[in-house]
Length: 356
Image (cartoon, one colour):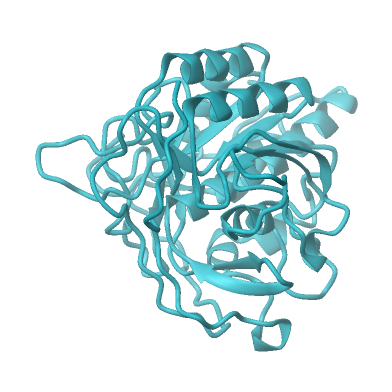
């Protein structure tokens, strides 16, 4: 396995960084659309450890005290995130609900950081495999990977080791968009045993940049997502990188509820112990979009978080969501910048991993 340096950005952002005073409402539009405020009264991800394989350890007031473990596997000299991508992802997962700045999808979850991408945003197969195994050794419940590259056997082995140990592996589908006649889903999301996450926007449309392919499992908010940024600020970014931490945070909410139900001797009818069962759970809690059933753009559809968390608390599943039901996609009230998503080039070559 060879370290490969890649210097072109996968997304671009304006020079402005948002501050807490710019935020009229701490909730991102995706959190409003998914009804997370209601869910937080029941679950906040407490007791769940989420591994983040990305550009390093975030330093931000909204994430103070959140990082339980951190290690550097990249070619950079520090485990700190100076690039920004990991800080944004971590904020979406677990920013504190303290009435300041933003709040994460699972505000009481803890984080384990594996810096597998360097300060230039790139990394190697070896670093990614090492990062996955570090998360496994640290006792993570979930491994969240907002990155992609070409197929590598050692990375697949590490993914399989984590899944075999009961760790949930959630991956960004990629930002290669729709190419007629081509599957544009990136590795490791291309592995059928992982959860491959697509992105949609506040208009309820699949994002143009979101990769397409039969491996896509579920779609979550991933365009103009405001989250934490190095230096104590906030930034709006777009990409399946932003949709993936949404999924990871929601799974953390589910896990807290499932464990609470099991402690009360009222376990769910179908408890989730591995990725295969998680995929079935996501399928059962999806609101179908696009063509009927699983399709290359939406997967099984938009995740109905209320139904998902209900399944974590009761042995009697609620009635299924009606096909084609539309979510109330409320607009995020903060000032956001124009951000483009997508790969700077074609599908990554083997040996190279990049953030999505």
